Length: 180
Image 1: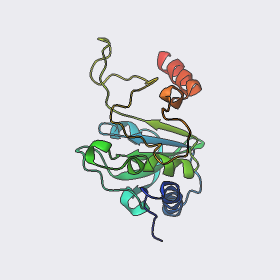
Image 2: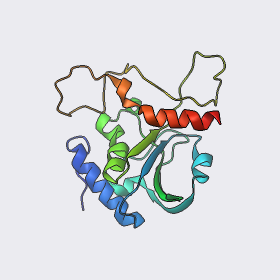
Image 3: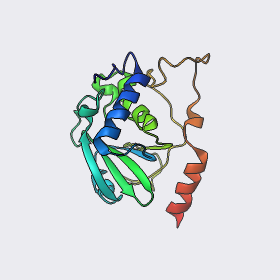
Image 4: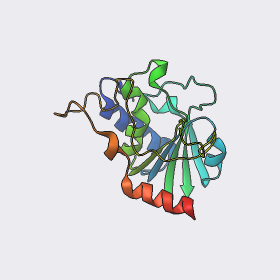
């Protein structure tokens, strides 16, 4: 089956990639997705039992990652009673990819059943106590690149407020666990 182009038909492409993922993993539905960048492999190795690892390019709509340290596979992991998708790498706007291609992993994960998606990134901090390698949760961001993964979605808004993009309940749960 040929995957539709994620630029022109992002939701059809995600549906096709999710179907390929289900066929390749033998898992009809996943619960949680993690989109991981460089440096996160050791954490992914500790999440649970890896039941499948597939090159993302085989799912359709995914270009190969070109950034050093970023992988190009997706893992299906059994973590207790949850099924986790760990995207071991990603592509970026600064590499010249269209926003729909950058968002393809998230759309695929949602089509695969994931109701929670956790994105990782490298971010600087102005807080001296948060040094290199420190963990932090983002609560908002400013889009300085003038491109959006919401491109092409019918909306009457010219500005999309990103404060609501980060789930408040999930952030509270993560905060409580990090404090204990």
